[in-house]
Image (cartoon, rainbow, N blue to C red):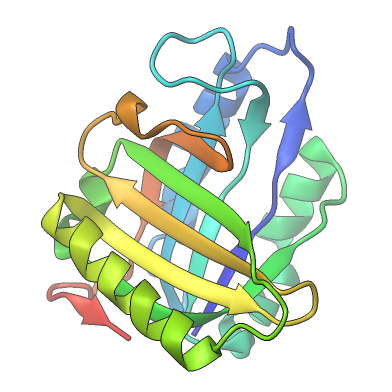
Length: 195
């Protein structure tokens, strides 16, 4: 599996209502997209009081079964529409170590994303085991989806979680909190997905 995210930093005075409306209008278009485990439509509003953030952001996060699904999306008219509306993004991808997605993931209202550097010569098997334990811990704490993944080009680790309620208390340095406007899931998503 692959995790993927791109994002757009929007001006400080940008009307984030435009992003929220776009999510409502376009979000369901990826429901049941082939090879997509989920897409979380994410935004952060620096003027909003819901979650702490320093920037206005639109930054969807995806979990793909494989590169074929990701490539199909990136070559689609849907992605072309995003680039026409917001610009040409840098797309980040990570190889998934552990992912758990609850059938209730569509009810998420908050997401958290940590990006950490992996120190040179880290024992990757040990790190992967620690990340699997973190996934289990966060699921027990109420996460509706939990993804831990890494990429070995710049050696970064991503931890992504979907939550059923706002979690402003999770704010800390190195963690971005998002409002979730919509979660696209496959129709076959009737039981928990584990990888």
